[in-house]
Structures are given as structure tokens and as C-alpha cells.
Length: 194
Image 1 (cartoon, helix red, strand yellow):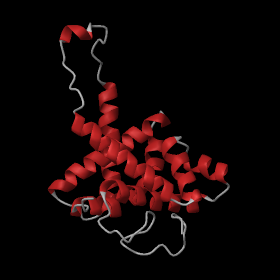
Image 2 (cartoon, rainbow, N blue to C red):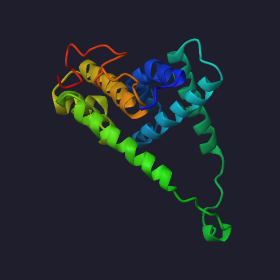
Image 3 (cartoon, rainbow, N blue to C red):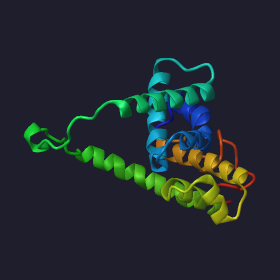
């Protein structure tokens, strides 16, 4: 597995831990809560692309400024009168690229790594990740369903997402288990089986 680039390590360490707070921020500002995951991903893309040119001085401030700017851009677009969507799209004669065999293979390999990494998480961590990321429950809903406080849940999300990111993008360190940070052994067992 390839080692993470410095930019990927920066992103995983400085941006991903703020995901729960970012989702709360976007959820408060967004009319439709089902848009929050897509908005979050768009913020991540903007942050990552900007960081490719130069790393911001304060990652958290930059993350939330980017989210605020995205929401402002979105509101501006909503005010613009939309083009009539009733025209025949087939008349545009647009070709759709097919997925190459290499892309399929790469996607399958990433899915296997993700599946393995999910299996390596502790039961609590896996349940939290599943409820928050797959079922899309809010932090409050997930904490109520699991009977745990929101602070503990947020910690599981942060550690779990980091462990999954390392598994999918490559940790580069064979002695670390998913759920541990920076090559440290997992001593508390909170996010990995021990």
C-alpha cells in the first residue's frame, strides 16, 4: 500500500477531526438536512484543492470559512432563475464516459480495504460510524440509539474516520491497527479490537 502524501496526512490530521462540528454548522445553516453530507464533501474538495496550492495557517478557521463561503455561493445560485429543464436532453448528444476496467479494479480494492478496516473497528466504533455515515443519523439521534453521550460518540467518529482513511488511503505503517493514531499502539481499545 502506498504511503499517504504530506497533503493527505495534513488533511486527515487537521481537517477530518472537525467533521462533526462542520456537519452541525452546515445543518444549522441548511434548509434541507439531507444536503449536509453533499455540502460537507464539497467543502472538503474546496479545502483540499486550496491546500494543494498552499496550506492555510489555521486549518479549522479555513475549513469553516470555506463552508460559510460555500453556503453563500449556494444561496446566490438559488436566487438565479433556473434554465428550463423541459428541453430534450437527448438532443444535446452528450456522451457519457464508461468506467475503465482499471477504475473498477481500483474501486473494488478500495472497497475491500474499507470492509476490512470496518471489521477491525471495535463494536462501538463500528456502530457509531455506521449510524452517522451510512444511515445518516444526527449526532443526537445516534447517541440516543446507542445510549452514549455525544462527546464519546464524537470521539468514536473522529477516531473511526481516521482509521478508515488510513486503511483506504494507506497507512504506510504495518504495525498500526485501524483506530490508532500516528503509529501508536491502541491502548484503550476504543476503536479497534484488541
